[in-house]
Image 1 (cartoon, rainbow, N blue to C red):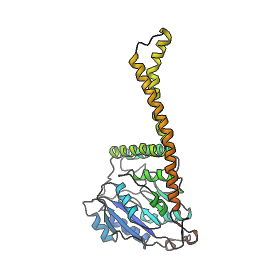
Image 2: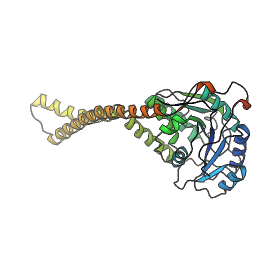
Image 3: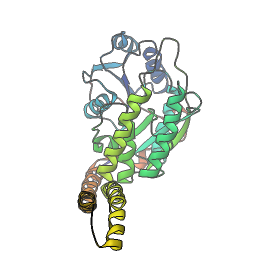
Image 4: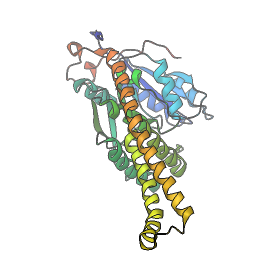
Length: 335
């Protein structure tokens, strides 16, 4: 059985950054003011504008991650740092550091493994109209495929328990990492919560790294891959249905001619329709088999998750202002 911790929780703040020199200093200072004893780790992803220096001057531990992409950075952070509570945010200043305390309080009082700071007004101020439309469509698609657990799967402001961090596979490379986090929680039916927070504007000189079409295509591909891995029966059944419809479309006129004349004059069409029907049956069978495999994998992930330590209710902070939250430094100094 998992041991219960009885000390005050150690809190770390994790900030993945790429060319955020204009904002990272104020972001680090904001988190230091909100959680004065928390360890703040900035992972610089090959910035060329002095982001690492500004973060160091503001008092953060700085590590360089050479593999380009937010997913690579998050995977490195989660592997490097040992703590009880993890807060992850962007270094661009769009998320208010002062909201971190409420994220932690919600995580503790609701005994959640992840709290997502949903962005108030993001659809009205997403930088570009393409981003706003993409947010709506992808959130709707997520709820359709994976369930109604989340309303803002792209929020980069989140708090996690150690259980979540150390059981999260993190296979994504880029901005689709937030989608993977959400699917992981939905797949294992982990306790999660959402907290609506203000979403700020980027200051002058700070620019979004998102590409509406390129990153949108990556996220859509990640949706398909995650559905294949977590819901293979639905995934392969949908493809099987498409092949069956195509087969019936080619087969129907051939059968109609056969019943009228007793002849099959379009033999290639008949062979093609038969082949498509066989492929449909094979895909359906693959979905049935892989569904059992996916269930077994989810069970193993759940067992691993349950083997990790959790915080004891006896030492949760009281419902008081900021002084009641005693943050500790991460056990690993990744500087």
